[in-house]
Length: 365
Image 1 (cartoon, helix red, strand yellow):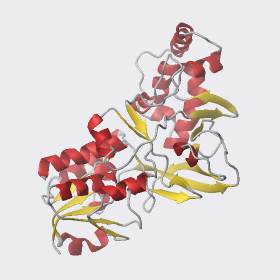
Image 2 (cartoon, rainbow, N blue to C red; image 1 turned 90 degrees about the vertical axis):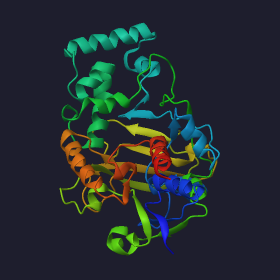
Image 3 (cartoon, rainbow, N blue to C red; image 1 turned 60 degrees about the vertical axis):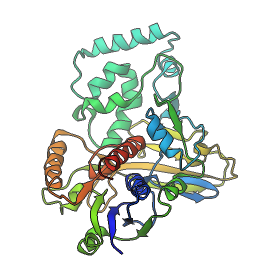
Image 4 (cartoon, rainbow, N blue to C red; image 1 turned 180 degrees about the vertical axis):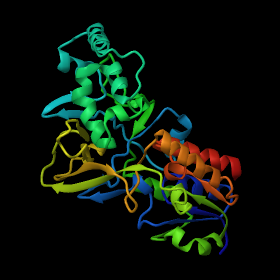
């Protein structure tokens, strides 16, 4: 059979594009080198718990179009992301809010918290933050930076905070209220039954082949379709001809524990430098589970190398410049559409992946 589109990757971008292609009366074949669909949002059931195999994914958005779109395929629960920071046994609220400031400094009013942050910013002599460390101190003061930002961030990125760009920390919410909701998002939740079930519904009626390595059989699969939607790493597509783009990778250690409740929260970050993992995820709390056992995953951040799973693009000037060179090569590939987190070398939230796929589908279908 000949198809209108060959879609390489059965993650969110590929699944959304496939669904839109089918709705437009086009034929598509979806392939993926993994043995399962859903990309990094894949969830598998263990002990009756939907386990996020590739790390925690909490859907959140202010985009009503993206929210309405995913609600075609799943019913979302009311989960609100309220992570906790553990610094050597001391527990603090994340996001940084009045609970955090009260425990750190004993302040009880927003004015007192503002004054304390301003005092520590002035003592550090920061006017125009030039790196992540200076930006963090400017936002929350030296004490919170040292206890709750520095260790975690340096584990996550494998670099001193003084060598990381300031914009990374700007994603972190800081509030002079007692609001424990991490995201400033109108819509938020977890699909009941897991993300895999949601993606299955997106792909319903579309042919899917798993365990297929496109780049090993490129000529064979290219011949099957008029156009290709490629959601894998853009540098891998071109054989790393200009050198590999850099990523951070994550290793997960997942355990089933014979207890109904291990840590009392879905996400706890370990912010000291000595603890080797960055956080522990207790998956059942994403869906308010009452199972007799629990499943936890410890996350260990590492430098990416060929063969590892790429997670976070390293968006420094060197990698941005290299990506632009690959993008110029991609623009010459008239039959190929590059999309998604790896195809566009972007740190995408799920709603942004969906919005990007919908926009591309609207342009060409």
